Length: 382
Ligand code: FAD
Ligand code: PHB
Image 1 (tube, rainbow, N blue to C red):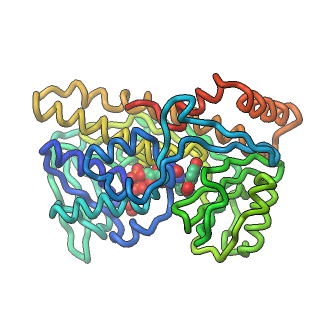
Image 2: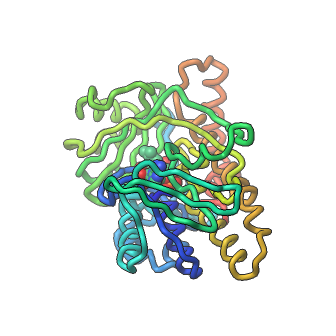
Image 3: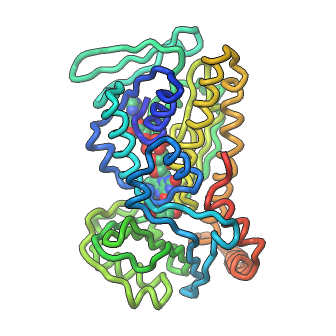
């Protein structure tokens, strides 16, 4: 269930392992491809895409970044990932990864059902799992050995795990990010993560003529109520002065607000259902981890299913959730740490301000602290 990045990569990995599968997606291909989300992927994620033959366009059009700038009250310092851990990240939009995955799947004639409504899961613990859905008014169903819930945070599959079994761990932040995409040259050749008393800001990009910027806003902000000029003025106030002066602005081609949330549902499996990606966990985007976790989940799931079909052993499948969750929780921790260090919290007192200042001062001056950040940002192994 779900033809987002998790579902489509899982499908691709399964076909390579010669395991038949069908992807059932609620929306149209155009709709999914147009959703603007992630911009940065870990080195392990880009290595995986490359090893699957999905890296040609990424290597041509993406950008390898060997570090980032962190700014505190407009004063910047750089964390040099290459020097610290000899690893980098790739700037390549989720929209493009999604297109590459669909091109590969559709191009190879693999079954993908788009515009499936009223998707329902059946027989999860009875040994005869299936899903049913309605497409263009007609009901259809698919029998399977296993179901993979890759239907994102708002999907249905997580809810198939009974209430008395499912444990939820959640932190909802009292703010969101307003994001703007504009056809302007990026203000800096690397990302800038900025803490400022007026709120967090992030300068990111997609290519030399497409920039992505975010500013912290209240959770209930209506993006349409902000003019582009208001957005640019606010961004300029929060980023280093040199960046603010050289910032090239233009009309926004997309403007939206994302709420910030940390969420983990355990277990990630129930009967013959296995959850992967945002269906099982959400991280605030500050650590750039969500898409990467979706990919490590489906990597582990494929390994486990391949073992099941080649040897008959379900040991790895039974341990799927525990294996995936070890990596998930580390990314939840890193994203929570980045979020806590860089955002303005309305209820923070003077003590909390000093802790934030000290955290950033320590990070700016300690190679050990920067190494820990670099190791996590470029991605823990999977
Ligand atoms: P989704 O992308 O949500 O895909 C789920 C799919 O399931 C969708 O296509 C949906 O239509 C479909 N679906 C839903 N319900 C059903 C149903 N009932 N039946 C069938 N299909 C259904 N991550 C990073 O790693 N790096 C970043 O830089 C980054 N930046 C981000 C910036 C923003 C502003 C946001 C919002 C997110 C960012 N992320 C980032 C997170 C990343 O976008 C997500 O973690 C990623 O999309 C998760 O993929 P997924 O396939 O698990 O879920
Ligand atoms: C993005 O470019 O959309 C982006 C980059 C880094 C993040 C989050 C989002 O941490």
